[in-house]
Amino acid sequence: MARVILVTGGSRSGKSAYAQKLAESLPGARAFVATAPLIDEEMRDRVLRHQKARAGSAGWSTIEEPVALARALGDARRFDVLLVDCLTLWINNLMFEAEKQGRKIEEEEIEQLCRELLNALSGHPGTVVFVTNEVGMGIVPENALARRYRDLVGRCNQTIAGGADMVTFVACGIPLHLKQG
Image (tube, rainbow, N blue to C red; front, side, top):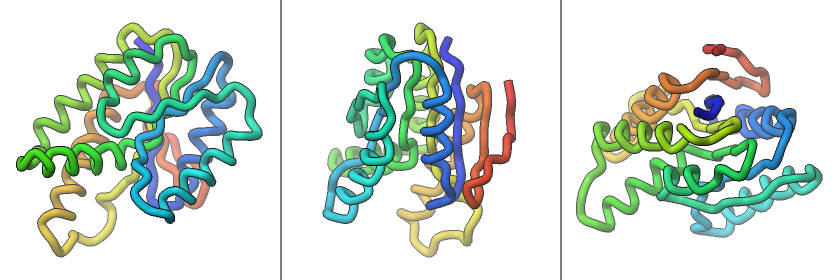
């Protein structure tokens, strides 16, 4: 099984930059697995900034997969290092797809999908770095959809962290190692 690292933190905490530096410190072929949908100009600008941050670094390939993440990871065994940025947007995308189908995605389904992600890495020879937001440290959201989103991201983070070899929390650009395997 791949070595699994989870990097979490608040928005604009420096977690993506930390995860990229970590991935670039590892030898071998690297792929950036992007989950972000390009829904508006602001999101396009964010994606371009992330792409520019990787442009100076040799050896990055990009895999874009907003929903079928387990399949994408299973198909990416030729890469020694995978950087998945981010699980938070993946949860958003799963909620959106479920809503289009007229259903709600529940915590049990998210937990199962996260276990499928970890299982997809069973034959991966390298390291997979997941990036996610820590969304449960603020006030309780005032609407049901935002509360469900917070709960689903929290369940995802707990499940991936449970299967991870290492978990790092980033605040103000400074990493705090919560779990080291």
